[in-house]
Image (cartoon, rainbow, N blue to C red; front, side, top):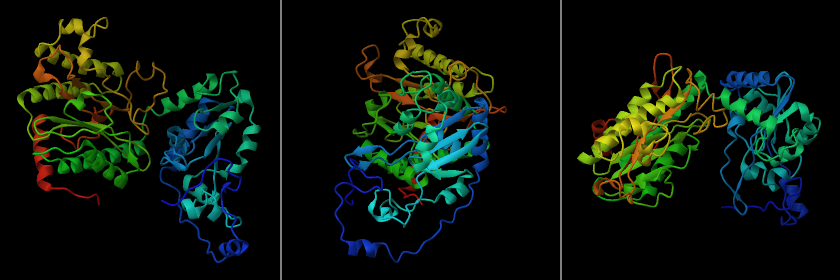
Length: 491
């Protein structure tokens, strides 16, 4: 890797305090002989979708100015950064994927995108600054970005002056993404700038609730992410030996290759849990190994290039066949998931998807001799003892975030009804911890979760991740077919 530059004391032109004093002969030579080119940009087809979202948001706050930053690059270690991932709400409203940008929606919905433009050859920034295009590549000009996104643009250097003109009582900010913006526009209600206080919190809520209903373009993005995820699971199955162990991280890496090739990245840290690791809900260390005769739980999703993500979980028998006990547990979770999926219809309460799945699991636990009470008593809100072996909720919204719409009010999300165009996961599970002395020894260390991404329509639920089989016999057949096909590289 080339030597990078520290951020401390960086001058306005982007050079660093420890930069060498280049001789004038070198500087003069670098400033000449460059051909200027333009990027071949055209308006993106989704421009009207983003415009409709901005209009709906502006309509919710008439006469007010709304400030939505995307955020900045985050330091990974010393002078290296994590790969930048735009703020989800900012990307939802603009489609822009670059760091540091800020959307300002003025009264009536008039937008301006403040962005860092191309590093001009009029200064030495293009070869000396960490923002220069010889370091990070060619950035679009203001005009090119405006053409691409259908948005008026302005130089990021003009942002401070624009923010200084805003009336505190008529301005709302999506806080926590850009310290510069948070400091420039103080909260009107006197609360701290951190988080989303008072009026600013209402902005975050409104964006989240707009995101509940996916438009046709968003549904296509989610389908694309799910299709890539199916291919990723196929890649992993083809690399999974039946007769010997391999590292969980090997399988994680195989899926990550597909995610980077077919999309932007993984949508979240991949969970690859072999054996008893499958009983740990968010197992992301992935430093174990598979073993023939045990199960392998994988919770993984591809985030596509427009940042919409899939979220899928499958459990495979490493040697190709479920044992009778493994199959009993798996089939119980499958039945619970099917009961939940069938509830995904407009007007059905979000919580009823969960309850439908949980009743099936409670009945299975009773059949296994584990419930200390009746199924009805276990399902009573005053008891819920069945949750010792299920632990988590059955569903969450899915979209441009893996846990989408998280800022929505309870009455419109967790305690509200499903609507047409909602996309949610259905992911029940049973987890028998290896240290749990209330279950038979042969059950300990078995964890099963099955998860799919479901679109709610007036004609019934649509499984966007149906390209992966779910029933136990179908999983066995699919695994054998993938192994027969052999390993492949994305292409």
